[in-house]
Length: 627
Image (cartoon, rainbow, N blue to C red; front, side, top):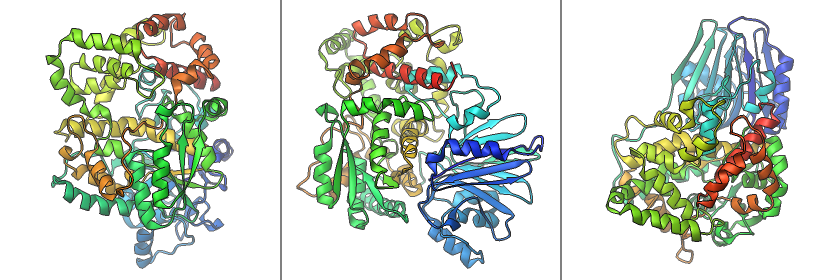
């Protein structure tokens, strides 16, 4: 898994500071507790902290070189097709000095030049330096599974796997108001933006080149929604998907250390469990259990499936008290603010799993690739909405606000609240943003500070405009279009960072077989009619699961999502923390924030997600001296 960082002063050619690089790497040593290594050569210094997963001997420690040591690389991630690549390269005469997948990169570069990244199937961020030509290449995997941040400065560039690790080395640090506004709305910042004006996230599927002549980039992969031939029949899809998913699972088991599975009650992890049972390489799985609230808990289904698969299942009891007790270490170590409140649960799970394992598989990605979110049925609902009298809808909204149980996962009051806001939007993209927006414009206008935000960014218009930039050019179907947008926004900027960052804090590698390169292509080939219809989502994967599932086990009727009872937590165990940050004089908000939110709560608005966004943002910025 690992982490990387480096400086390249290609603009001034001043000597790079190896000591400063070592300090950056040491600050994220949990990403790679097994070894820290650096290469320094004049105006460049690059380094790595290693979590040894493949090729465990010291020969796999980084940096790694080609045969004559004219090419050097540092790398974070895994290359799942490296055995095939290595065999090909050896056949062409390349000599390997280790059994690690990282070494493939330098030899593949010798064969293919800067285009070598297109050959890789994996999750990765790399920095490869050609000592002869003084060219630095930075690359990131297509699904953005591995983070990489870049600061362009007067010397050249500074890059790192973690935003927080860069803060002490930045000459200037200023918050980006547009990014802050988007975070408050959605709980994440839309990459390549970060909260800081000076730092951006590297685009996925890109190789960036830096030389004394300047910088350039080439895109080796980009998301496509349509394929020359679409799979229209479910039986044909089942046959193709079975082959693709089996291969992806097999590749993701490639490891010299034991691997485990994070098993929830969802379709995706259930499918992974069934394929893993066929491979006979996993003996134990883990599931998180929110024991204080049954509406958030999926343990019983996970237990039944694990028993069928022959896995020992460890139930991690995520009580409200346990989540609250872990809040401080979670916030203290957070490399970036995470608005998804399940991040605290992911942090607790990773701590538990890492006591026995270095690698865990998870089912993330299936919803974005195969139409799994309830929001994807909105285009169908929008067609019938104009026929329903507004007074009826408003009456239902008032009724739900009065009687719904906000302790439940996605209460009806919250769903209707978001639905009404979405129906007021002018088009499907704005409506899709609105369904994910936890800071509606009427509330934003009341609480956001005009001295921090420009007038234009008080409303959500700028965030929606940036959201539109991810619209897929080749998407002719509304379902594929929305899936592609969520792949490029929510998955890339929220879900993956939540999983990857929290696992890394415990030196645990998270792998996502559903983001395998071949699964991405399968999604492109899947007809939208197989994915979503009115009131039905992720049809194709559910049909495949029903085919593979034994008759003695029924599908989980309601997927809860790995979401803690955050409303209850904020009202009880975390109430003091919440009240502190809502009363805190933050530059983002007008005075008396808590009092201004009170009428909104009284009128039925479900604001506990917004409360969480406000608190984690204020907390992270304050801890990192950005307020």
